[in-house]
Image 1 (tube, protein in one colour):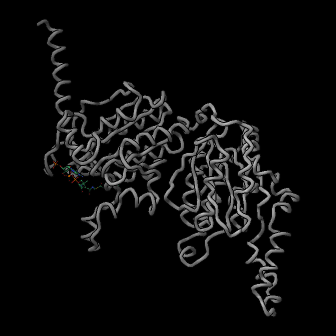
Image 2 (cartoon, rainbow, N blue to C red):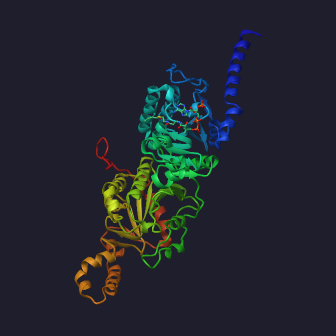
Amino acid sequence: MDINGKIYKNFLNRIEQFNIQNGPDKIKKQHAKGKLHARERIALLFDKNSFEELDAFVTSATPDTGLGKIDEAFGDGVVIGHGHINGRLVYVFSQDFTVMGGSLGAVHAKKIMKVQDLALKVGAPIIGLVDSGGARIQEGVASLSGYTSIFHRNIQSSGVIPQISVILGPAAGGAVYSPAITDFVFMVKKTSYMFITGPDVVKEVLNEEVSFEELGGAEIHARKSGVANFIYEDEENVLLGIKKLLSFLPSNNLENPPYVESNTKKDNINEKLRTIVPDDPFKPYDVKKVIGLIVDHNSFLEVSELFAQNIVVGFARLNGKAIAIVANQPKVLAGVIDINSALKAARFIRFCDSFNIPILTLEDVPGFLPGLDQEHGGIIKHGAKLLFAFSEATVPKITVILRKAYGGAFCVMNSKNIGGDYSFAWPTAEIAVMGPEGAVSILNRKELQNSEDPNKLKNEFATKYRQEIANPYIADQQGYIDEVIDPADTRMKLISAFETLENKHVEQPARKHGNIPL
Ligand code: HXC
């Protein structure tokens, strides 16, 4: 064999070693836990043959600290690289739980930083597939330093490129904070969980018994903490969900979201919208049905569906163009604004503003949720976040008032006074300082106190108030809204209004950044 032959043989040997290390045994180990292997995940996520791996052969470089053996597997427990998803460039890191539990040591961290830097430099989204026991205990402070540098990069990239975290196993300790900073968190039911300290620590410190699932499973983070934006039954569906989300997002903050040929007539007049709001103002209806009748057929992707269900947020297409929707949900808690719904909507609005996605607000809100829990929990500062987010957003912003727009809620939900570009109302809109029942209790207190049948009288006053004051026409006459529209024409009106705003440009005063009430 000549010298070139030997060199080539060495090269092949290395690849053989690599394939043995990542062979069927490792894959079986993952499958036994009901999970896919880091490389299988990448294969499902990216367009066929488009993935290019980087740093496949690096090994842990940290000297033995005496805390235990470090596995010198190729790759140091994480696969990194880039590929195409539906033809668009995306960077990825995918942690390999079969190598020291996907724990993060110095080299592992450097690899993640490498793709973070590349993604930011070229302006492409980055996806982190997380399956990790957190900071690698044997590597001590080197792992902590690695995590911290990753967090710093997450923060530098925030608002510049979309960052998506996908939790596909444990995300313990330091592993949770990168996802927490990124724009969207996906989880899988039963096999993924996120927590700062695990059940053992909880037992030790608080003497409380808690399971992984109760502490930080997908359902808990989707419903209670709001940390997870999307949860799915299995990994295959999570990976499909990511592709759907990406289809609405630009690759970076300098681009517009991708356009897709519309599947619905532009001038679709939908008469069902005329009767969707019930005659009885106390009767709920499902705002998601309203959304479905306005946007392109089947295009709505709800974000954080299970958290704070009194507000609905998500992406959709209107005549082929991506828009974001923020809608009060009368079906849940009458659509009131409370702490959780304010936080959910504010974060979503800030994402959309960062990435040039116009916002449609569908308003039907009786006000802020009263009560000790809310006041002591800080509804003042949390509700202010929603106000701040709507007001600072410079993307095109349109509101349609479907029914109630009372009090502070009228001001907060993208009113024209905080920069809403157009405000339309349906004839069913009720715009006033407060709801009829509350208003007449104050305005007609004396008559009600002296009445023999105060309930009957209150109803009469409330009906009069609703007819004469709580309607859209006073606001229309005074120019606080732009037009009372036929609900059936809503789609046409919105398409045309958003078209006029395509070149919207707002100059901001020079400043480092605003100070959102965190
Ligand atoms: C080194 C680790 C590790 C870690 C797991 N492993 N976590 N090695 N550092 N952090 C290793 C295990 O020793 C084991 O090695 C292999 O990974 C698989 O782990 P198992 O425990 O067998 O798996 P499983 O039963 O599925 O349990 C997974 C787990 C558990 C729940 C994640 O391993 C665990 O509790 N790990 C520690 C989690 C944790 O407390 N992390 C916080 C670190 S502190 P072998 O050789 O047996 O296969 C932190 C702070 C950073 O992250 C703060 C930054 C802000």
